[in-house]
Length: 130
Ligand code: HEM
Image 1: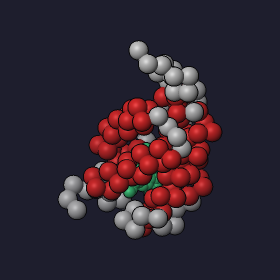
Image 2: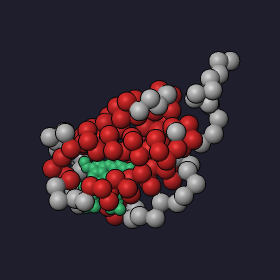
Image 3: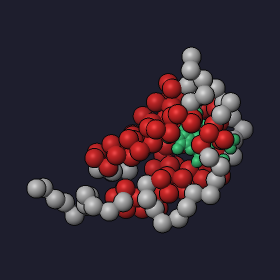
């Protein structure tokens, strides 16, 4: 079986992606990509981005098995009523994939992270028809 010391197959996804520092890089890049996307940027008009990015790092860290809990509001509470469609969710997931790739995450780790966030669509998407 092939093994590598750079991307061990054991440990939490949090560890395998590179811990807190790596997630800060990924989330900063994710928001740069979101704000450069004409279909997504309008959702974040007037939003305190540094604060939301900090929460996002906390959320991902906790969701991927990191040591600290996420203390913010739930996904449904945050996103309901914003008119987010499946299409918007998928675009964010694509930007997350690219941000992980750019940060050097192993493709298998990226795939596992995308699989881990996919079920969140049920709470984030509130508008069925575009
Ligand atoms: C993987 C999917 C997603 C996750 C894990 C996620 C997670 C989060 C988190 C943790 C926050 C910060 C909560 C807080 O205020 O403390 C947040 C805020 C926000 N999210 Fe998401 N989100 C996702 C997808 C989306 C999508 C698809 C959209 C819209 C296209 C979106 C729009 C927003 C907006 C506008 C805010 C700011 C709310 C505010 O503070 O006014 N999110 N999200």
